Amino acid sequence: MEITLQQHIEILEAGNRIAYQICVVLAAIVGGWFIRQDSKQWTLSEAQRLTLFTIAFIGAMAGAAIPAHFAGGFVEELTLLTPITPKTVMGGIVFSFLLVAAYKIAVGNHYDTSDAFARGAISMMAIGRIACIFQHCCYGKVSDWGMDFGDGLQRIPVQYIEAIALFAILAFIQFCHVKNLFPGRRLFLVFLCYGSLRFVMEFLREPIADQYLGLGFYQWIALTIALIGLFQLYKRRPQQRFQGVRI
Image (cartoon, rainbow, N blue to C red; front, side, top):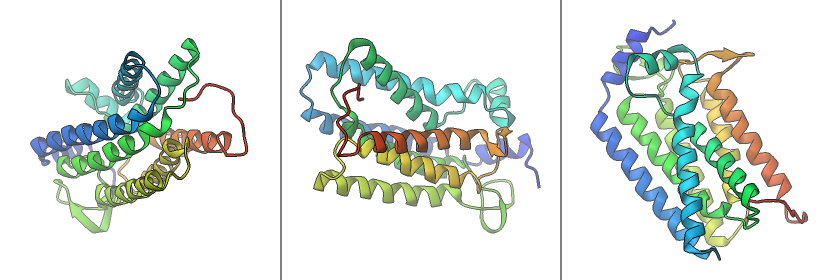
């Protein structure tokens, strides 16, 4: 059964917008606090810190919005019908990473700041998925079991499943932080875990964007995140002495 644009709008309208916005703000506060705390170990000037934070923030905001204009399907239609552009945390992750990396290459900054973003990034994603539960966005396919998100059909509660998995990843990253495991690689553990998780979850989610070569638009972004994480984990393995720019 193919979902219609009207059904999609009905599902979104059945959600709790206020609760969604509260969760988004809470995600930003908690994630920002983690990043601020973990960046205190940087031996950088306050001006350098502020510059990195600003660039990471700009990359995250731009990256969250840009993919909607190329996703096709209902996502692209909604950008034309409403003043609000659908956002994706995956685009924010990729663009923020690339923008910070580009900045560091441009100024010749070789200082590794990646670990400071690990707990903050995954905590924002975990709390943000709770926001999706309230908003009824990112819902699953029609199934014999599940929940009604506003269109009278039983759907796989993908938001709940993913939220539980994200908090499990957060617990793992917290354990690594406390035990100082995988130094210089924790952010990319987040990339690998989240990218892989989202890639799988997209098979259960109602497709609202175009497909390419048998995979959904957002699955390709998830795969890109996972591959970036895997590549960086390999490049930063302990026996290697990497001399290039690190974010």
